[in-house]
Image 1 (cartoon, helix red, strand yellow):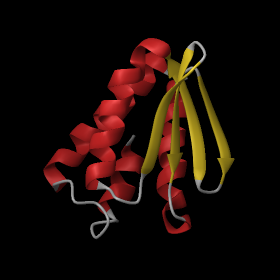
Image 2 (cartoon, one colour; image 1 turned 135 degrees about the vertical axis):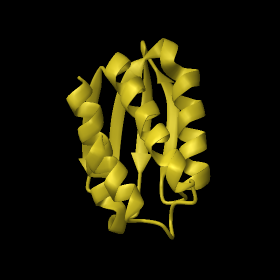
Image 3 (tube, rainbow, N blue to C red; image 1 turned 180 degrees about the horizontal axis):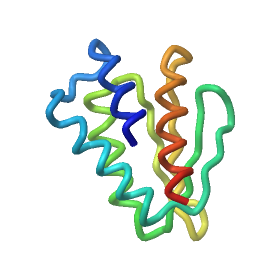
Image 4 (cartoon, rainbow, N blue to C red; image 1 turned 180 degrees about the vertical axis):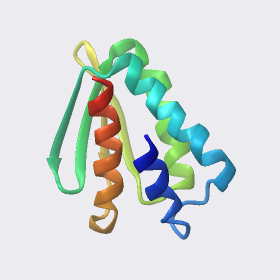
Length: 110
C-alpha cells in the first residue's frame, strides 16, 4: 500500500488528486482488494486485469471513475464477466511502475 502511495506522490504532474487525499484513495483500493479480489493477471507491461465478485461492480466502477478523473494516465474498464467483475487497468509505459504497485496491492490482498 505504501509503495503505491509513494509512487503517486512522485507523479504530481499526472495526478491532480490533492496530496492530503491520496492516502484515503489508496485505502479505498486496499479495502476493495482486501475484501474482494478473486484474481489478478498482468497481461502486459501496461495492462492488468483484476477479478472481483460480481456484486462489487458498482463500487469498482465508482472508484475507477474517480481515480481516472484525477490521474489521467489510468484507463479503467470495469465490466461484468460471468460471475465476476473484471477491472482492466491500462497505463502508458512510463507509468508501468504504478500499475505494478497497484497490482501488487491487489495480489497481496488475495
